[in-house]
Length: 113
Length: 113
Image 1 (cartoon, chains in turn red, cyan):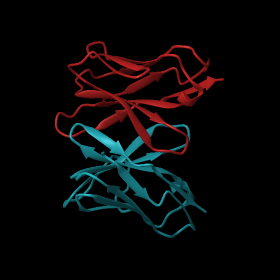
Image 2 (cartoon, one colour):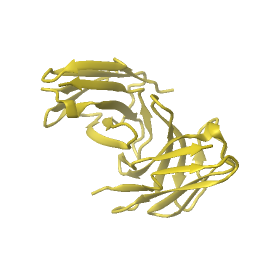
Image 3 (cartoon, chains in turn red, brown):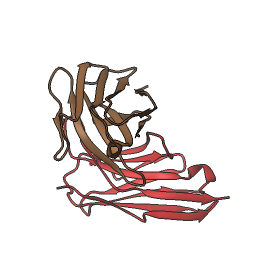
Image 4 (tube, chains in turn green, purple):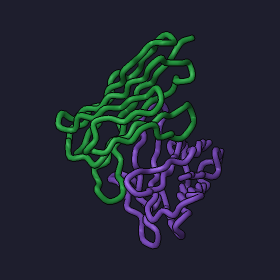
């Protein structure tokens, strides 16, 4: 059974810092991995999707890497801003047709002004 | 593109009543939709997979007679919480499958008094 772990569970940083969120998964037979953002009481916003054949994806200040063989992914946020404060969820998809996501517990990020 | 809506966004009901939550894919067709449940400060837990024109597939431990799912069209899935009790209070999120990823609705907050 696939298990997804995110470390740390919570993180508080001053504005402007670069930071790294970690995600690990037990079964490396994944099709893709996705990072989401969730604001309190809201749904999920997809940030980055990395296919199993890819090593990284970038969008603005965000960079996600994937090391499938070791079962790890990182989300790097550059020059953090208070608006980045949210919960970040990592999810892996093992299906080659359609998707079935297994989520981590999330990292709650607070960026202090 | 790829917008998913949920209605209502929040609902308060008395114990013993039934509540219906709608999930719509607004600009694409989805043969598969997913229903998740999220408790405070926890990650998303998959409840069931909703398939258009066929019966839903429920995850282990989820009562299918308690949580009725109907996927009557390619753009609409409904979740009905029957005879709701306070322990059913939670945040319910749906998603629609589009290729190799899911697009999430904004969630429905259910409070059972």
